[in-house]
Length: 185
Image (cartoon, rainbow, N blue to C red):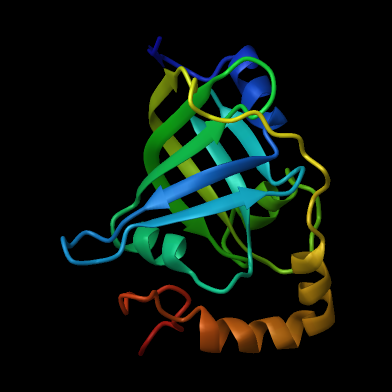
């Protein structure tokens, strides 16, 4: 039923790339913080960088929990579910880092993805464990279409509006951890 893989081979990379949505789970280090699970999607926003490394395009959103948690402790799990075809779930456990615009490798990484308005960062994950499970309880669903609201919203805001939004809405996590807080000092 389940298996652990040594690496992301071509077949597994194809499965991951074909999923229209995946989920990112993170948590703060303390026992009293909120666990966060974020759905991610949009074609061309996920990439396999190597046999044990992946990345995804992080777009401006209503919160910045993943960024805050990764900056605090790095722990992350990405989960991909097959909603069509044979049942399957893949979990990628690892350590994530936030690569911001202006960082040395940002342009290189961002170039691997479809260009989209509202890019906030690229999340790069060093994968420590690749686990496959059955997915027998995951329902079959048809993708009707990608949602376009986020991109339209980001385009309307423009670069200055997005920067202002991030300063006010993405500065800290719901638990008060720094996310996109400007560096002090």
